[in-house]
Length: 188
Image 1 (cartoon, rainbow, N blue to C red):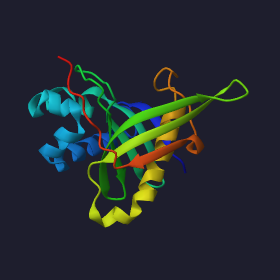
Image 2 (image 1 turned 60 degrees about the vertical axis):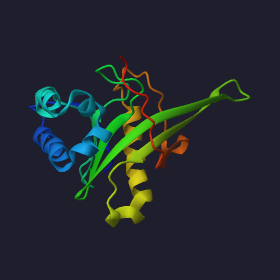
Image 3 (image 1 turned 180 degrees about the horizontal axis):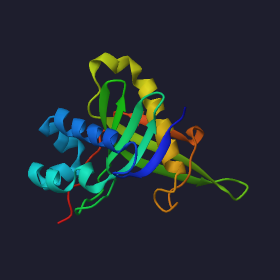
């Protein structure tokens, strides 16, 4: 089995309750100070307002990449430079696999250059800051990077953004861990 991308999961979808449960797990198991670091919508709106307008149950879930056979789900919490006057915020995702939940902020950095034949080369880099990486899986970082890369490849190949993002393959993309994201602040 491979990863499958879904842009929206609505109430009539078979996966809807599973995604609701994952979102609730994220909100219940993540300490408030970690939520504020990982989720810029939560940090900006505050706990009460965020819970009123942002739960997946009220808006549907979007940008989900999952592999049912391996029981892996990469769930987007919010997109980079998203709503609410953000300035250069990274994507916020949660990677669920086995019984682990790993919070991820990543920023997509694309390099482009000319080739002699007139075409261009592309190199996509995902600077990933895993905010919660349990000690028990420290030796599995390469495996986790592979899951992230596989899922993001499927996400990139989709038409999730009107087809405006570059398509890439695992061969021209890499995931780099431990690149702390420097938040530039909210627009005022």
